[in-house]
Amino acid sequence: MKTERRFLIAPSLARLVRRDHSSSERIAEGYFAARPGRTQLVRIEAAKCHLVLISTGSTGAEAENETELPRSQAEALLEVCAGTVGFVRTPVRLESGGEAYLDRLVTSGRLDLLTIAFDSPSEAQGFSAPAWFGREVSEEPAYEKRSIALEGLPSGEQVPLSGAMLDAYLDASESRMRADRLLSRADQAPADQAISRPTSTSGTSPVEPSADPDQSEAAHATPAQARPVGGDRLNGMAAVLARTVRTPNESTHLERPSVSASERLGWRAKQSEQQA
Image (cartoon, rainbow, N blue to C red; front, side, top):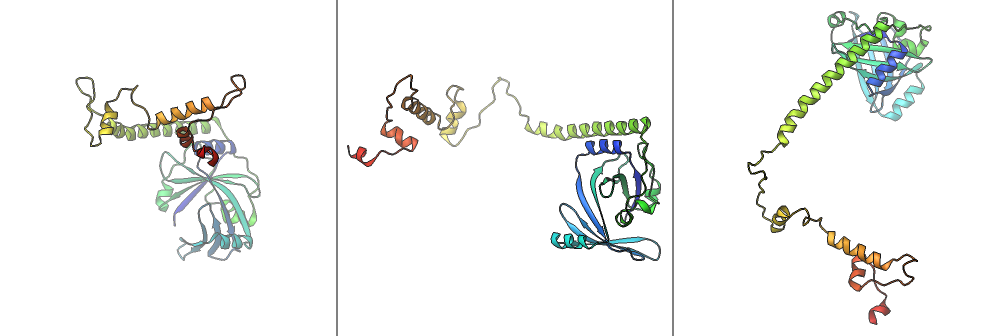
């Protein structure tokens, strides 16, 4: 199981982070009554639902096991849990790398909590928090989701936002955007080279021979000669409609289209007219 470090984030700054990272997901977790050395919960996400068992070994290390559940069963278990918590999770990219996500807790109050997961305790200890992070609450059980679900949010704490914190985040955001643009240009360069074609010295590009004579003629046709397939037929139908349907100012007499035009338009003459 990964080692996590949690930090409080000022509400206004958390709003800016969510705007820059638009991918978010609503998650609901329900916790069963606490037992020594064991935590059981059901987690409902947009795509999957899981029954999660977190057990603590003799060395203090935690192990997490997940079992996927049908949504109907997960929702039924959620109703009988001792406590629930809902939050909106937004993945966050950090300059230093690592797996981070911002949780906006929306149950029994509001709280913005940024969590970073590390593969080992030593990696977690070596992490230096950016200047825009708020106070760290990794060692405070009251900010764990199990405690929030069973006991509610901790007493209201005002997370300060200073100009230095805002500047630090904006610098990190701009650096990330520049890196994305450079990566995008690097990805587009091979594609641009692939679609480029050598030009002829005479100023005209050669036309490859085609096995289909009609296609060969279409390739050498001038712009005035090159017409879409079925263009003559559509023009003929438009002319028939213009002659057949007249405005009252032009004439009150309606001309019936010819038999060939009627067939093109899908009309059929009455049997008596056909016999005449």
